[in-house]
Image (tube, rainbow, N blue to C red; front, side, top):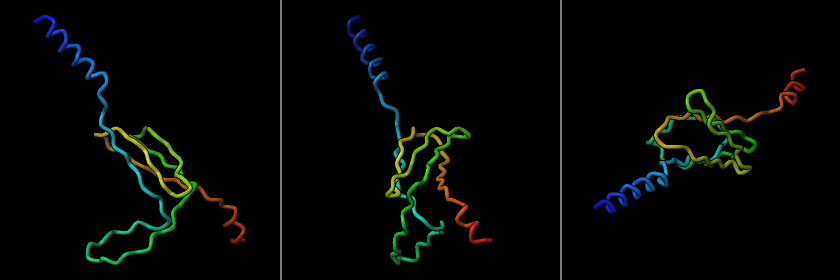
Length: 105
């Protein structure tokens, strides 16, 4: 009986040590354009907007940055996050303002 209890305790300890936590993969494409409300009544297929490259992705949990990533040249992004939390995700694309300033003068 003592061997059985010892074996079961060892098994449960090992199972807890090697158990994986639930994770969520968040992925998609960054596209140029504006966010619009979607209507279920319109079934027209729209052309896909151009994908954006050179975009930085920041993942926040509360006020803390927990992950950063560069979006691929194809506009694709992916990150794996722990499940069960709320996240705030920010995409940033920097542009050169000098090009626009030259036109204003």
